[in-house]
Image (cartoon, rainbow, N blue to C red):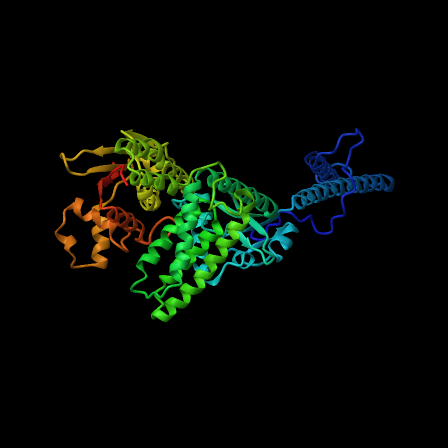
Length: 575
């Protein structure tokens, strides 16, 4: 196919469309039929002239009479005139079709152009290209038309060479995925780019057609629908998980207060740990702007360019103000839903948890029977522990949807003992990091699970029970959280430890002992930070909360089979 192919423009000098050409029969003439008639007529004229010239050659009497000569000339001129007329009709027909194609293409509002192995755009393009791509592409290199940045031009050229390389291993769609998919329009419009192949007869790629489409309105409509859906989800979660929401707001206010106190880089670990936990909790309630602000502040505080406590304090103070402002804005948005005094009273005649505990203390002081107090705590104040873990289950589902993984509903086993939640609040709050660890590190993508012979949807199991100790010793609450994911690779843990602590005690540890290092501050098997993990803070935060309760946490893992976290904390129904 020639390099300057014109896909859309009508032939030069063609007259504007004046309606379809029709024969005497009333049917639209076919261009192919007219061409056949024209060729037949030309052949007849040539044969007639050859016949006249050949008469003397074969001994026949040539045409000598003037009248006969004029008859032949008149017939020839009439034939030539008729052939010219037929050619004119073909020209008109082709012009009409070209004009119709041009109108149809331009009426779609899409930009069409083509380019070949050299990357130079052909002469043919739709007028929408000028508006959508903000230039006339004819004769320009496709990189210039798409405004490919300098740092990406070498890669673009390499992929262009691969695309037109005969018998390369990648398919057309695999290669063009590395080409720009969006055009950076100066007015902020969302211009999507799609690539289609044109093959030569031998099946070799000859050219590529680029289709540019303005999807700004569709994208804005989808974004608006997404925002409305997130707002609806936020409202539902605030009402469904009111206690968790109040705890989140309380912890944010606690951060704002503690951030105002003197702090250095060396003493900032508790503050950074709280900030990291807040980001996860805030995102759960779809306070995205507040979550992004917290994420940005955490990244700024961990920036290696901060070399002094004064710089650290300045960044912290500015970030503290931004977090405070975003919190006020978020609460302002929902005040009509929850009321201005939502954190002082409930909307459903709820009894505050502190009041429940205070009443138990009053009964103790008043000399009420121990049996009555125990009965009150067990059946009025205490909550089944698996009910406390419902928020954890919902977060698993949300995170799986966010990263595009499949997960089944949590399967609960065990005795589901009642617990006094006041002592477990901080632990339950920190368990968001276990949920993120399971989804980001544990459960594999569906295609990987299928390749390993697993169900495409991951399964998380939670077992709760009371472990009875010897008489006179304390009882323990067991919370075991297991998944059937890819497990923890001890070799990868060792590789990470070798980079950060080459001569550490981990060198003498077996596989089970070495994977316990995931609870160390700053340790992560991720090579880069994501919205879900990579800081090396989350699992350390969980361990710290467990130890604050006098308990322990241990991780068990088997490669390609799954991981299990076992949490044990003292169990009591007394205050």
